[in-house]
Length: 297
Figure 1 (spheres, helix red, strand yellow):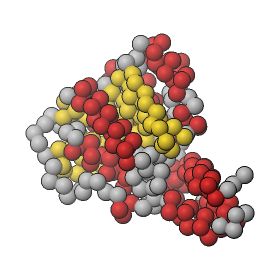
Figure 2 (cartoon, rainbow, N blue to C red):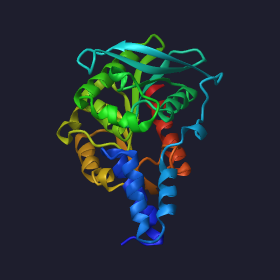
Figure 3 (cartoon, one colour):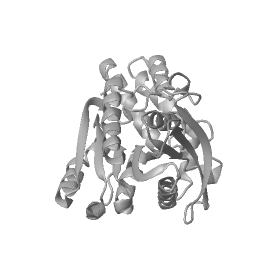
Figure 4 (cartoon, rainbow, N blue to C red):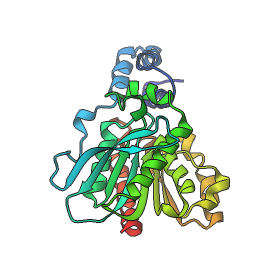
């Protein structure tokens, strides 16, 4: 039963449902208001729900004009993908390369400003970073997550995986890459990171998925990358798979580590919503960069 003390918990659960399903923004806000109505707090619930929606205007950590990096848009061929061509956001350090390369994979709504910022953070850390936009075949990220989520549902997921695999291969062959490749991603992108660790075998050297679905556990033995898995504590949908995935990695002899961040929710690294946990996000990113520096050079 909802009480004032549990209102935010119920709203966060509703927001998670909104993020990962077909619920519209209007339905999300209406259902939030209904949750609060039983307490006479419909207005407060609606306000808090509105505050949970992403606000990218206040969260940029690395500017695209930062003198330490150079950011540009690139196109690459993607045979077998959703349209045969893809677009991505390429960021590299302004220091002399070659560099270890990192593929950065977005959530289930296209290449939004948060994930582009993560690519810039990776470049500041010394890596050549590519963040592909899975929505390229349907015009690219539309400028808001609501429409981006709807567009991504129209695309074939297996073909998105092919588009990301082709992006990884394009990045690994880039003249500024030293031949060593890592991948990180968030939610949907975390699942893609796990998938690529299976599909790419020796071509991938490190994977750092954030709260993503595990790969086919029967294929974990095909992994050659070192795997670092980040979980939120209050995220039963994903964290419930941790023990089985850990066991499969251990049985296959895959070098790996996994961390559950106390008190966090799904999406804790995304600094555009109230699910953001700055301490956990900083620690997880520090661990991710350390992995990439160790494995990618």
